[in-house]
Amino acid sequence: MAAFTRAVRRLDAVASAAGYPPLWREALWAYLALANDRLADYGSAVCSWHNKAEKLRNTFGRFALPIVWDFTETGPLSGLTGDYGGAVEWVGKVASRTTESLTSRGAVEVVHGSAMQITGQFDAIVTDPPYYDAIPYSDLMDFFYVWLRRSLHGMSPETDAAFASPLGPKWSHEAGDGELIDDSSRFGGDKAASKQNFEDGMAAVFKRCAEVLTADGILVIVFANKNPDAWETLVGALIRAGFVVDGSLPIQTEMGSRVRAQSSAALSSSVWLVCRKRPIGTKPGFSGRVLEQMRVNIRIQMHRFWDAGIRGPDFVWAATGPALEAYSRHPVVFRESSTSGEKERMPVDEFLREVRRIVVEFAVGRVLNTPETREAEEAAVLDDVTTYYILHRDTFGMEDAPIGACILYALSCGVSDAELADRYDILAKTGGKAAEPEEDESEDEGEGDEGAEAETSSGTGSAVRLRRWDLRKRKNLGIEGYDGRSAPMIDRVHRVTQLWKDGDVTKVNAFLDQAGIARDPLFGHLIQALIELARRDGKPDEAALLESISNHMQSRSGISAMAQSALAI
Image (tube, rainbow, N blue to C red; front, side):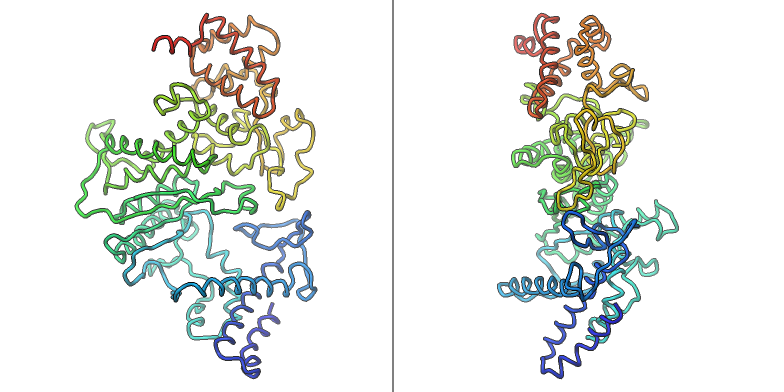
């Protein structure tokens, strides 16, 4: 790396002697410095081998510097994968494409500085802010920064100023400025102080944005974080800065084949929030009216998103944007205290929990597709575990699913993936088969017959699947819940199915009566939804069993609950 750095530093003199004009010399210098960084990315001791593609995998397959069991070396002048020639070629391709795009655009001014120091007057500000505590950007940036600093030294006063610091910009307690992320290690391990600093910093940046925006200007924020705390912090900062969320759209921005998407809770869509300045003198709001307006807004948008084909965890989190339109219209929202009866602030996190509950119920209602749901545009309330099961099966069926998406679903339903796997025994780890072919390293993991796969609870953890009904063998399945709660309804369905499969009608009837579900319309709707899902998933045996159970329940009741409700109307 030192040899390549010295070669780049000598470029200016060599190019000058060859008659290149100053602008060309500077461009070549900058591009070859980037090629050096790419060489470093493919030349570190954490590079691994991509088995299927038979090529070198670079250092930053994801936003981390992981330890690897073995690493792959390449010769920088070998003419093979990861060499210097490839680095120059890729930088050249980007430069060519960028140059083409500039021919049809006006002049662009690039400014290096803090977002807290914005000056001027603008009609729009579009920003993709730091994602809370998700990625230590500046720490990772140093991997490249140190080589750029060495390669570019002396190119121009501007570059020397940009790389004056030995490392990338960290947070400065003295200046109250710098890289803005929630990282407790920069606050002596104090998580509360780190979170407060992040929210204060975001509010300061947004306030500065409001100051430089025209009266009818817009602030567009791109956000894709699945952490409820991150949304809470973002919303709190926006409201403090005087902004109202005026609209939102989920836009698919992420590569599905990237490593980040395979084994983490990463979204494939980003939520784009369009914000405007809140009128001066806006009065505080009260929770009842705000929540009512939120429900109206969110139902309209949820229908739009659903009809547009947005599904999965992206749907659950994308609907957060429309809900904020009602909440952010007020500088503060009050509610009546449950203890003193006096008004108190309604916390952002409480509002967002209500939002997620409504969105999840809507999504489940689309799957259950009951007459009540179509009429009232609301879903009947299922327990958290059954809600998760329905959403997971509707999206992924009984096949392997990426753990990241499942984590997002679990968060939305108020449970964790660990609880679903260990406590409720409804998820099984199956290794890495769910990864896209381009990134999949575990092609032999998870192989085997259908029965054997569901027995395992091991694997890499990058993929999970729902346990089949006949492989859930807990003795108290469907009878006892946890923490004083009743058993999840999906557990009761699976217990009834197992009893029916065994041919013991007496035990089936006893369980239906004991659990109080024989005449529960919701139980019947759930079974009907599972019949349709089983047919879709190519599980005719499961569908047939559930149909028999449904017919048996209707015959015991004399007439189905659905029919009774129709006659009553």
